[in-house]
Image 1 (spheres, rainbow, N blue to C red):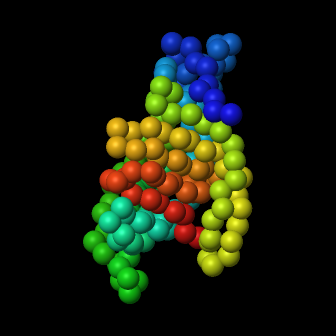
Image 2 (cartoon, rainbow, N blue to C red):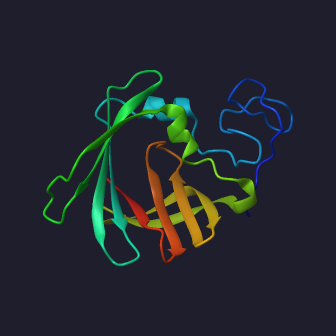
Length: 177
C-alpha cells in the first residue's frame, strides 16, 4: 500500500524535518517530500574511499552501457565522485570528477509526495548472472513523460536495486555488482 509520509511544515533543526509528533527525522529533508531510504550519515558510513558502484544503463532507443561511480577523497562532509562510462569492450570513457556532499546524495531520493508513493516489495534481478529476489523499498515517481520506479535495497545505502521507467525518454538503471 503506498504511503506518503507525514511531515510538519517547519524543521526542528536546520535541514532536518520533523515527523507529525515533532521528532526530528533525518530521513525527511523538507515539507512535502517523502522520507529518503537512507540518511546522509548512513550514506557516508557506507561510502569509503574507493567505493565503486557499477550501473547498467539501458536507454529507450536500445543503447546499453555501464556507468561507473567511484568515491575518492572521502571526509565527514562528502567525497569526490568520479564517474565514467565503459564501452562494449570494457574501455574507460572520459572521467568526470566533482565534489559532492553526503546530503546532496541523500537528496537524490527526496521525491515530492504529491508525485510519488512508497511501498515495500520484491524485485527480481539478475546480478553477476545469478537470479536474486531482493526485498526493496520502492519509490514510484510520476513525471510528465512517464512513471519511474526506483527500488532501494534495505542493506546498502549506496546501491539502488533498480530504477525502471515506463517512459519514452527516461533511461533504465540497474545495479551491477
